[in-house]
Length: 228
Ligand SMILES: Cc1cc2nc3c(=O)[nH]c(=O)nc-3n(C[C@H](O)[C@H](O)[C@H](O)COP(=O)(O)O)c2cc1C
Image (cartoon, rainbow, N blue to C red; front, side, top):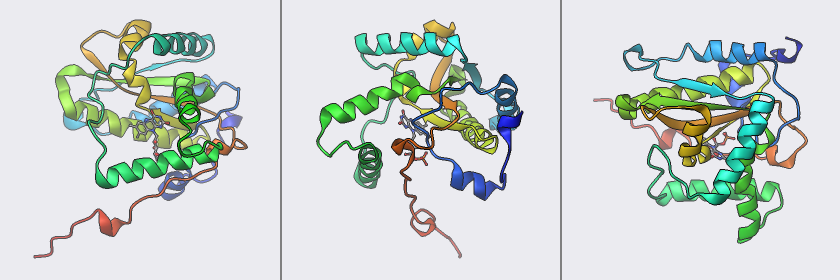
């Protein structure tokens, strides 16, 4: 496991170092490293310890077949997801979304208003940003919103576990918009709902798209203290 040298596994170091990676090296992550990520992510808590996540993972030709099929599907079909996508981005959410998109586009030289350029960048979602692997996360339909919450916790465990092993990741709700294709491709029945995907692999650290960093709100603006 020479690929998985851990430099610093303190929680703060992992949280600081993890970013959404949108360009990858053309190199498989060894199966034993992926299995270690999965072993660590399995420690995630869930309501009543239901552990509703199931994970479909691609490697090698499995990734290429999925990438090709997804690309074709997206060109021919409208988005349709198992969970409702956000209805609207209002106020601060709208401006944070805008800032994040602008940081992404300007990192690769796409100017504000360049619709063709931004659409082309968005399409890279469906190429898995060149990642050699994707994990599809599904939940049990009957567990409802909290099953999805449990899966969200699982996703973060997966991201941090991967980071601790030198593996870069990007969670992608964009792929959940092709849930019909995903159900068919992986043989996932309708009792399960697609939460999101995680594309992963070794990061192309020289690519400018991996060079920008997103901001976070100050703690003071998100926490309400009640002292009496
Ligand atoms: C549930 C979830 C879904 C996401 N879906 C996408 C996506 O479809 N495409 C994408 O480029 N980024 C996606 N992201 C990445 C976010 O844009 C990113 O986490 C956010 O901008 C913060 O940046 P950071 O991850 O680099 O810290 C998603 C993140 C989460 C948590």
